[in-house]
Amino acid sequence: MKWTAAKIRALKGERKVAMLTAYDALTGSLVDGAELPMVLVGDSLGMTVLGYETTLPVGMDEMLHHTAAVSRGVTQALVVADMPFMSYQPSIEMGLVNAGRFLKEAAADAVKIEGGALRAELIEALVANGIPVLGHIGLTPQSIKEMGGYKVQGKTSEQARQLMDDAMAIEQAGAFALVLECVPAELGELISKALTIPTIGIGAGAGCDGQVLVFTDLLGMSGKPVPKFVKKQADLNPIMTQALAAYRNEVESGSFPSAEQEY
Image (cartoon, rainbow, N blue to C red; front, side, top):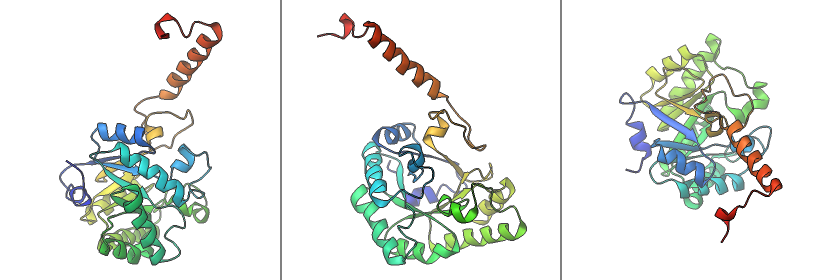
């Protein structure tokens, strides 16, 4: 069964939704093989794959390239492409064109847009033109300069009310689901209960309708500290480093290749 935006939306109240990022055909196929219904080609690839400090330098060419690769590795999961910084902010027309490119050129099934009520008109236009949209509010990494860093959002009553208003506006605009990032757990649960579309939390508590994490964080691949909201299911960095060091030692000692590896 190929997952669609409509099927994901229908999971509200029926079951929790597990989502992970992926960045190429291999990671896409691994997420798909684990039977997760959604895979996000996140602009987090700027940091996890491309070596940038933030998501801001990532452009359309890079996102299209990686989304197409993930799509080639996925057969069942809904592939969501993260629209990069300044690919939709300047105008609705630009957002429509660039979102359409993800579906036409990279075989994505949906796009993700950061921002609340400010993006409602764009989301409505995308949905009206056949492009499913995953919303994203709370900590929005593309606004990190304005926010002053990676901080929990919605801690004051005024901020919490604004996030609730943003969530309602995104639902009314036609998004099929909504990412809530780095908000207090109580607020994540309140927003989740108020909406009829699934909420996908990342640092937003267990009251959300689903969860999303970064692939490399979940598997402990980078060897760097991970955010508080991450639960590492494996710690692969030392295992991979040991394997690579063992290979180097065998080459240097002459024990690889042995007769077993020769023709």
